[in-house]
Image (tube, rainbow, N blue to C red; front, side, top):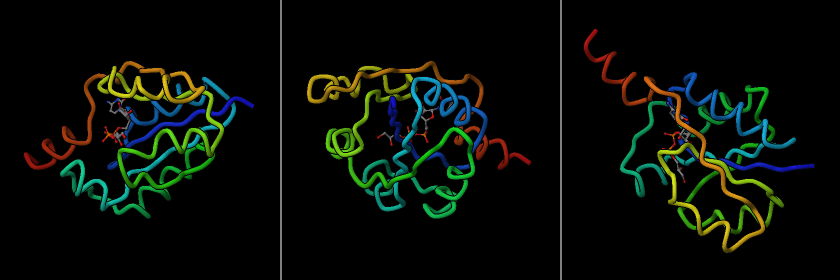
Length: 132
Ligand code: C2G
């Protein structure tokens, strides 16, 4: 059983997120999504998501590619998550390219950066809705 993990906020869930999750799942048989908590988002990313953690978790759990959702509470949990969940592949969109290469040095997992889906982002959705 090949196990994959990815991390993110996944606010205002959109097709860019779905394309990422679909490709991440295709790299294995079991996909864990570490979902940024509201506190982590605010404290560490100065982000305030539209949907709460619970709502974002509910949406992710409804996606066929997602097998487990866990909380992302800090920047430093990736190595321990990978060991705890026996992860083979760590996946992020390539806006993070290079940022998590340490995972390959500190665990047995390989790191894959997937091309982002162009033209869509949560920020863009928010900005365009403001113009309406
Ligand atoms: N993504 C994508 N294409 C888009 C938008 C997002 O492939 N058009 C990917 C991002 O690259 C990321 C995932 O979808 O891999 C989730 O995106 P965000 O919710 O924006 O994640 P982020 O806030 O970057 O948090 O520890 C890592 C952080 O938690 C990542």
